[in-house]
Amino acid sequence: MFETIAAPWRKLGHLTINAIWRLGFAARFFGAILLYSGQSLTRFGLTIREVYFAGVLSLIIITVSGLFVGMVLGLQGYTTLVRFGSADALGAVVALALLRELGPVLAALLFASRAGSAMTAEIGLMKATEQLDAMNVMAVNPIARVVAPRFWAGVLSMPVLAALFNMMGIFGGYLVGVLLIGIDEGTYWSQMQNAVDLYVDVVNGLIKSLVFGAAVTLIAVFEGYDAQPTAAGVSAATTRTVVTSALAVLALDFVLTAFMF
Amino acid sequence: MRPLFSFVAAVLYSTHPGSPLDTFIEFRNVSFAYGERPILKNLNLTVPRGKLVAIMGGSGSGKTTLLRLISGQVRPQSGEVRVNGVDVATLSGRALYEHRRRMGMLFQFGALFTDLSVFENVAFPLREHTRLPESMIRDLVIMKLAAVGLRGTQDLMPGELSGGMARRVALARAIALDPALMLYDEPFTGLDPISLGVIGHLIKKLNDTLGTTALMVTHDVHTSLDIVDYVYFVANGEIIAEGTPEAVRASDSPWVRQFVSGQPDGPVHFAYPAARTLAEDLGFQGESGV
Image (cartoon, rainbow over all chains, first blue to last red; front, top):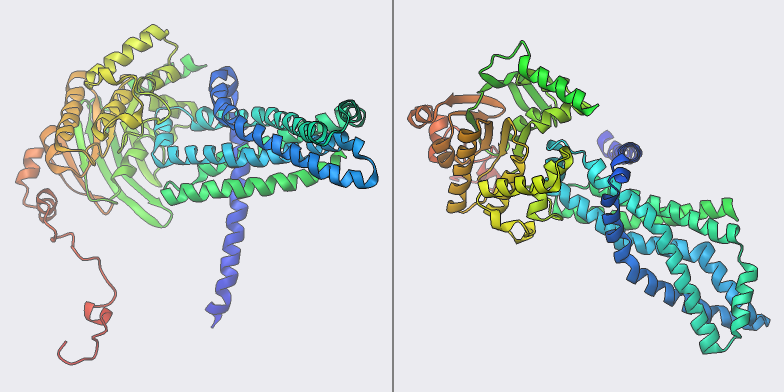
């Protein structure tokens, strides 16, 4: 009798302790990445190589998505603004929405599903095939050699990708607003120029994307490093990377927005 | 800083008082458990310098843990693992990495870095641990690849190699820094008979020509008995038999006989112990005559 009542509580306690233990492990892992980051800088080629895999190979999905998001913003923004007779403000609406929110957040979500999941799967498979063990036995620290360069590559790539996303989005808004709907070109750009502040909008947006880049990449490399070294384990870790990154990005976005604007 | 550590490690390695010159690896009363599950119990064994020694035993008998203890990836709960007179458990940080630089390990399936070419895989330890000019790295890599008979594969990726070739490239990588100690973790698993013979031959040749001390964990009886100098049998975390290959072949221990000839039943039972009888499991309990 006691057992049937106690079992669910015991399970809850077990899950809670596990979750806290994992959080602590992730924090220690982050500390280890920072501690062993020297090689990522002194042998910058290692980091650049990862920038190629994480950043350059994400260019297509980021630019195409940015373009379409901007075009949709142009359409939706126009149909709403025209009701209030302020269709001229379209440039400002598109730019502010992208720079402050959509650019950093959507680019981070896309980055998590394109590059983050690939990082988790790669590190998880390296673990499953004993490559990380082999490195360790060869007296090479896998955190310094494998994890840290990937982490810094993600942190470096994310703001650039978000900036590209914004640029393509603004261009998409221009395509729809100016070329398709026929808003005056001078108005589109000058309204934007008036409304956007370099520090409040552009720099804060870049800070956001820097934070998101660090969060997404940390989650991706941690999940890979902590994955169960089996096919099922790596697949579960990849899923967790995408889900946890998405939640982390949205939650961090709320916190950062509350502080920034 | 690094030359100083190398120097200290070299001194420790050469003149440690507790190390008779003919013993390279020594396990003294070593016990090890993963959590509650005991893996090794009060185990003693020695590997003489320059010899090729095999540890044999069934799957899950704690063989691979022995290698992890030697490389310092795990530490024993009690007892000492001495390599060249140095207790591995006392090493940490750079001293542990210095210890590992002096050994090479061949993993069960090679563990080649899948994102690097064959050349870069073999060059990996050289690039990480030395500051040799590129031309010398190239020469060394080609020599190591030639030693395992795979000089022509340097531009291939690991995915393009067969299992046996991957194992040979991994062997070339393991000997890149000319280690004093080689560890082999199931080097014969999953190989066709020809590759198996090639790997066995290479292991023996490396041991003979370079004077390397080697410890091989395996359950392949016949290839191993042909090449090793001495054999330990491990079961349930304990050494249950040992001897030279000739002694093992002639052994009348029932366990060794079962292992060497591969009989399905013997001291190691075919059936996993079950709490209930077969009749109970099939629901025949209580019916007369069954």
